[in-house]
Length: 304
Image 1 (tube, helix red, strand yellow):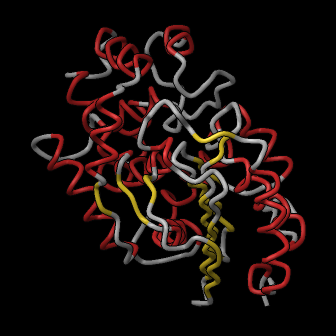
Image 2: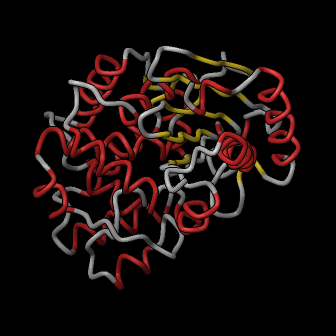
């Protein structure tokens, strides 16, 4: 029996309680008014294994926006459509030690986004999504994900309106600089697409099903593209804390300020968590604590 399948309900309940206690140290994102309404004590987890075995506990009916977790899948989508050589002309794969919305980092790098998991890289890739306009590009991307993973993502229009009402000045500055340096054609369209895809929303089960695509061999995706995405998640997915958690936890992961966290256990399955209280970097405190304890207890690290 593989690591994830050895998990008992008793262990799981204890780990969730630990996560909830840790989450008290975090704060819900208040820059976007709709995100500020989230229950800081909320927690949900869904684990889906290669064998078909699943585990689901907590506030699993809660629907939340994927926010930056979607960056993982816009990278995957473009790799599948255009190939690695083209995609990595648009963005790099180097980790960043600056915050995810750093304009200074982008200027230092002469306008070439350091990696796809920070905002400059994700806005650049949003600009490359196939389709005629922002709404169609978002819809095609969402339909592709739902068909591929059997999940049920939808665009949260209320969340999108809230994001637009308090548009990030940092993201606007990043998009403008990307346009100035020739990395974007139209910063307004790129930002619109980026904001829309970040507001694609679902439950932890939907996120885990997406993660399973990356965790397990399948005939739907290129094995090379899966490997690339997992590697970039490991080194860049938790922003400037990525190296710390690669050592401590040893799993490819991606977080979002909406409270979502996806962890990949290659060859075994995926773990999706929802825990909206964040640390100062923008990672969900409870979810990170949960995955760290789970990885240690079940010896899940890919370096084990």
